[in-house]
Amino acid sequence: MTDQLFRSPRASFGVAVLGTGALAAEVVRILRDTGGDLRERAGADLVLAEPAELVVDATEHLGAAHAVLDALRAGRSVITANTALIAEYGHRLAATAEQHGADLFFEAAVAGGVPVVRPLTQSLSGDRVNQVLGVFPPEHSRHAAAQAAILATLAFHTRVEVGDVQFEESGPAAAPDLAAAEALGLRLRTLTVCTRIAEDGGKEQVSVRVHPALLPATDPLARVDAPSSAVAVDAAGAGRLMFYGDGATTATASALLGDLITAARNRVHGGRAPRASYYAQLPIAPLGDTPTRSYLNLRVTDHAGALAQVAAVFADNGVSIARVRQEHQGTDAHLIVLTHRARESALIDTIDALTDAPCVREVRTRWRIEGTDD
Image (tube, rainbow, N blue to C red; front, side, top):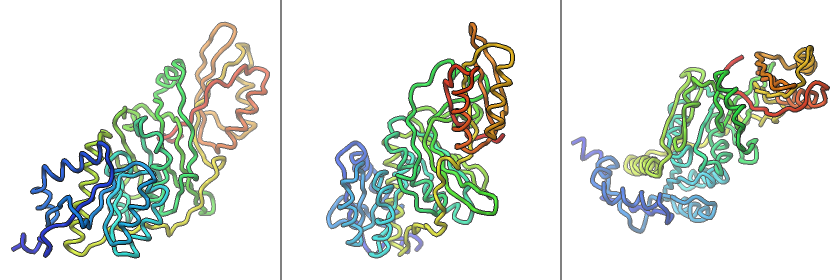
């Protein structure tokens, strides 16, 4: 009896797959090879056929926008892995889906299939997300800003555009700096950082960045290496939640199929996908207003009083030093300075002043530090 109630009055749903690459091929293979299992989970057969009520977008470019919009206007539900599409047109696609009674799912569009979209939109919908940190493999770097925009939009109920993301390329890191960071218990990663900034007086802003950053070596994110991806979500009630994935095509295909099953079940039972939420409308913080800790490598003249001069520059610009490590090299010395949290603008002013200080030969490296309190 239960099985009969679960089954759709319709024997099957037509499925169309957009794309010609490896991801599209993997989705087609799974549909053909495991159709029986998928039927039991969805409540109806999922058949590669027209007319299609369910459209799987396995493309990677914005050229799919017209096809996806046409599908939604026709009342077809869309399941997409297209990061650029969701980042650029997500709000428009969601509005079109709402207007025409269709569903829009995009779990596979973020973090290479790491299941983080559904937790943000459903499991944590009654909580307050304060920060989202992500580490993604290098091949995802061209979509890093887009993924950051999507994550911040979902986490903070605020529409964040790709152009709002502060993006810095990660160039090669010098071996001595990596060794110095390791000695201080820190490890370098290219990090996606989405943070809710609470100001005095209750005012809030959103900071969304992608850049090289140091993490405590004990942080699970610091131990993530390519091709894996990981996302950490810090929420007021749930605390810190970690999501991992290997970033493979099969993982992304799995996320697409999971959303496809949900879309089919909604057709069977009359449910709908969660709606986009932009109610908070928090302003995007200028980079200068963003508070972070910093790692600085300074090459200074090795003489008495140099450290005091450097410390005075930090103090004059309102930046507090948390830790100093000194390494001698001939007539010079390297000062590795870790700061307490300070506004980005104060750090920039400090670096400018250090450049002009008589005892400072060079400001060699500056990295931000995330994932740790002062």
